[in-house]
Length: 158
Ligand code: SF4
Ligand code: SF4
Image (cartoon, rainbow, N blue to C red; front, side, top):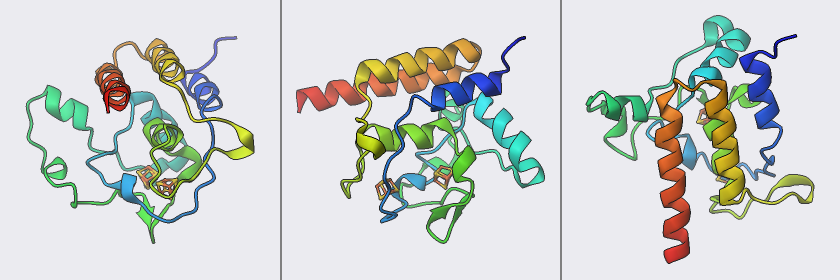
């Protein structure tokens, strides 16, 4: 039996540590930080049906040379799924929302659950490679990979 793209995505999600979020902020839920992959959209559309709202994708925007108003200001625009400071689609939130916390970026010191660890650069790159294999035509993943590499390189140089 062929495994569906959605099943493969869920398998990848299972390798991302869950964070014990203290619900102190929604800093990373600003639309200019957030994007979804094509396969995220498949899963979200299936689950949310007519509640599904596609997120503007900063990487596609840049690739197409479009100066998207959502991405101009870091203080602008919450994610459409943010309700009263909390994610209203937590179980099906996009991959990037899972990865940010798992990279150890929380300013409130939230830690991974069950004694698991933040993702290392190699683990993250493996996840990205697995995402590419689901959908080699999603150029967003390659842009994201570049960002991840420079994020870890900057961290090592600081
Ligand atoms: S989908 Fe949820 S976790 Fe992701 S940015 Fe939107 S509100 Fe935040
Ligand atoms: S940054 Fe920390 S407190 Fe804020 S949503 Fe992420 S894990 Fe929770």
